[in-house]
Length: 490
Image 1 (cartoon, one colour):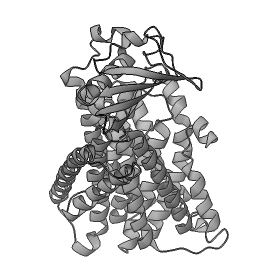
Image 2: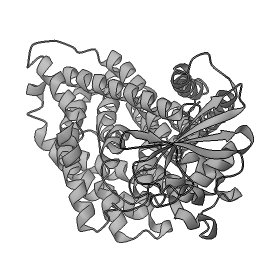
Image 3: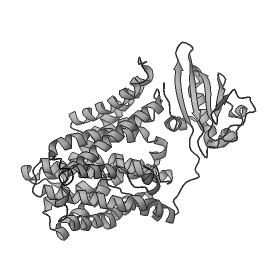
């Protein structure tokens, strides 16, 4: 874990190695059930996307959503075409196998992106675009892989039929995700569950319902679960930090189990013959396909070349392409085992290269962003019988709440700072008490002013004592973004 934090290397590769050591060429544990691996892989991906959506702040990705949507569709199509051509002409795969290969590796991996980018100090416009892209592009890629894998059964499909099918499934998945997310946020915010520990379970259950609903409606369940989780994560959820922590823990368990399982499924001695083809296809993807897809996709958005360079290199791959490579194995496509081996080698090698070098590239491109003020975190717990709320506020590094006196918070009537915890010691603050980085505040607010108090605290965290005059107050247009950037729990 410490090595991962310092180098940007996804620590989950360690668990992939554990699976290989336990497998046929290691301790001899034999596992070759591709169909079971696909089912478990889909289940893990649902949890990973749910955690990613719950942990993504809407105000950080809002401006990047159009660019991410184009990258997830047009960009994926370009990557598929270029990579498929390289696989066919340079490696000698059939066109069906080449198209499957292109589709499988063209999707950036949500787990890899979420685990690496949150440790790399990048501007929010870039982290937002990359996180949104990784959440969106699984849906069209899964549809492409399934379609290409079924060509031997259904014959050729006209390109416009494939595009139409993808558009329809994405639209259905988006609609289901919006519906479940909106209704779920409304219901959880108003229903009092008998135990606080049930709220995280309820939120993840809603994400699973979104996936199931999208799949049953013949739409994209993966897009549905990410959109639903995004809406839930940016709503005033009860016990929001606990929900986030629970989802993060479950996602880690899912990712660890998935990587170990994928390590068991692979046969290392079979990878030797496919090592060079994997390098060739990986270079075509990383050096040609990804930069070209970024360049074309970003044309309407006037993105600086430095941002485009980082977006090109940060197209990380992980468990998702390996899981998708199992689909043609289940469909018994010709060369499906070779596709899996090539994808496995490609993912491991290029993750080892791209992950650790991403911080270095960001520094060379002068895209490091280590001094940006961070939003304060607010946790809310209801006092049912007293008709009030307790707001637990944490002041992070670089927050502009540092140096502000309690009286300068100018909280609305009905809200007051009642306790400050500093360096392990708690005390009742005076109006002249100066807040510092690392402080934890306990704010009591009535039902009527709870939302206003939260917005005011967030505004001060962003703009300091002059927040009301700097345009960082709680305007109506900013309320949705304000709510999305603070953690709530009831």
